[in-house]
Image (cartoon, rainbow, N blue to C red; front, top):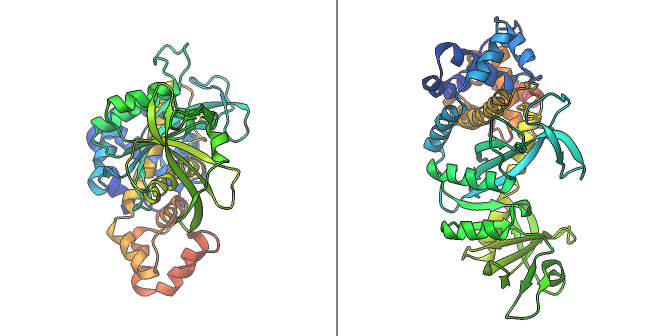
Amino acid sequence: MNSSYKEIPRGLNKSLRPYQKALTKSQYAHFSTFVVGLIIHDKKTIQEINDVLSKKDQSSLNRSIKSWNGERLNEVRLACVQRKFPTREDGLIIFDDTLAHKTGRHMEMAGYHRSGVTKSKEWSHCIVNSYYTHPNMQFGYPITADIFTNKTNEHYAYRPVKRLALDQLCYARLHGVKGVVCADSLYYADYILRELDDNHEQYLIGTPETLKISINRAPRVSLKEYAGQVTYSRFRAKNQWYRMHSFLASIRNVGVRRIIISYREKDPDDKKFYVTNLNCSDKKLLRLLVCRWRIEVWHRDAKQHLGLEDYQVRKDRSVRNVVLAVLVAYTVLMLSRLHATLRRVAERVGRQWQTVGELCRFMRLATIKGWRWITRMLREELEAFKGILNREVVVKNAKV
């Protein structure tokens, strides 16, 4: 281990131990090294992590990553997190994709994908994610992730993005994950709704503004046209005001469904459209819709703090296992908040760590200073400890 780092924090070690049963002794040493490196080190490439946290050659870590049983490791991860944060029927299983931008032209599974930000095609891996959360939870956690592959891939069968999402839903149900199915308009199709209906799923799925609807057998109009003719109710959620309107309408090849139109009061031109079979109040629907944004936060955190875009491995199996390691790192951080020392820190300083970035910076501080230093400062030099946290851990403009 690099001399600037003193030890792997106990708050991380405890959450990593369950993975020992899915790995050999040497695999676990590499696995824990890599996951901890994704959390505490600024640079997230395999080479940089190996240089600061391991005395072995980088090639050993590369070979180990390729040999991990990703499916087994993810089963262990889900079992660990569900024991602490069990899922509920009124939670959300959210599906969305993100692009991990790449530069290497020889990376397997990379291709040109349209970016929702730049609206242009970019060289990247397209990662389809499923994520569980609940309106009462501060965070959620990823269920699984798949990488979209084209029809020429020799190792993995081609599946469209929508089919990847449906397969991930089956995976979630097999592993006991409850919740309402939620996705944006990229995942809308009449066959998707029919399949969800056939499986008796509750859903909240985005629709394109061009979708044609009919109300009481009237001529069909697009949702965009209809949205300009109705009045909206006003609701407050997450300290923001929203406008919302829901109604029943007929959709061709689907039938009569409840349609929701909503937008933030400050941005009336950015209307969102959803179809649902939920039978609940508009206020509850809005609470669920606001939660859908958390998967976007997960994507941002995974890229900014856990290295989801920084990996340089080329082989598809290694790429998938690196993505899995990012899921594990995120889950380990969520579970670390339940560690006795972190609960004591939150109690003494007056606030919990509110972002993934804060958790990463706290664990980096614990790695540099040592876990015993944390407990001693809490006990003997609380004000000095608060000053260090304000400088090195908490987000800008926040104080403890």
